Image 1 (cartoon, rainbow, N blue to C red):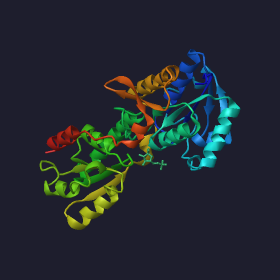
Image 2 (tube, rainbow, N blue to C red):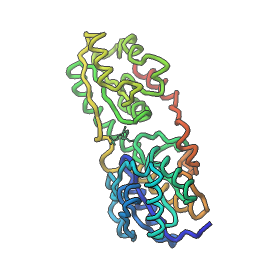
Image 3 (cartoon, rainbow, N blue to C red):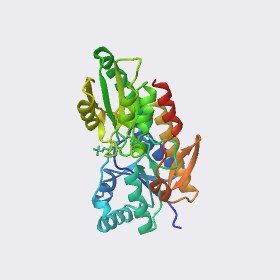
Image 4 (cartoon, rainbow, N blue to C red):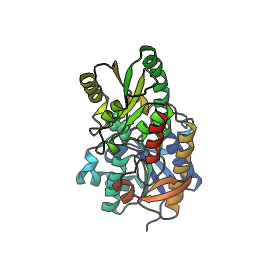
Length: 326
Ligand code: F6P
């Protein structure tokens, strides 16, 4: 195996709070261990176009508290083609980058896995996504901050819901995963969460209406995970308007507000630990693994597992929400 002298770092896919803390941790830990570091801009696109800059410790000063990513990010179609990946490999050779740390979600790590296999190239992944949907890690970078943003927003909407005695459907992100919706609902005392993981098992809306929403209160808030499987908040609200016209229904879609803002303490610490662990992993000769955290311990999850398996929702949380919303 060739010796690693220079490590490249990039962020890819949707930005997530804590990505900057991860960039800082990878950079500082790499330099601490005697490696050279290069920052690659705009995700895989920057690998193809060669948007690369040498990073010193000062390049990552004063960023731990910033949301977004100083390296910019993109969802790059070209990297999904053989030709695009070949160009990316040429760039890496030209720049003398011997290994990569990729911070991103499911799609980004899928790209990393394909590339690593095709070119026998060492890559370490860090789970950077607000969705928390990567298998093999209890938490992803950005999830905790997004959850707190949802909590603040829902707390505010509750004032209107209760003053006007309305039923609110609030749509949260998560792509095809219900972690933000379910835990957001528990944290804000919502009546229910409608999530894709159980959408095919039961008609969650019917169950909700049958139970009379919350019997002891005149207002209700339901968190809905965005997903074709749940139908989304708009579609559910339309159904209620048609089938149960007695309810005064409103919809709020939280949207990209959930991805922004300064990372929480938990995300900063998680990103710092994971970033440092990425360099440890390379030093130990690990390749093509995602850094995860399980029961507060750093673990290495092969890309194949992190990408292929669906992370299961904790049923105990569903039961807790049901029991507490009577
Ligand atoms: O994966 C993160 C995420 O925010 C998802 O929750 C959401 O479905 C998607 O990205 C939105 O992506 P974009 O910002 O490209 O519209």
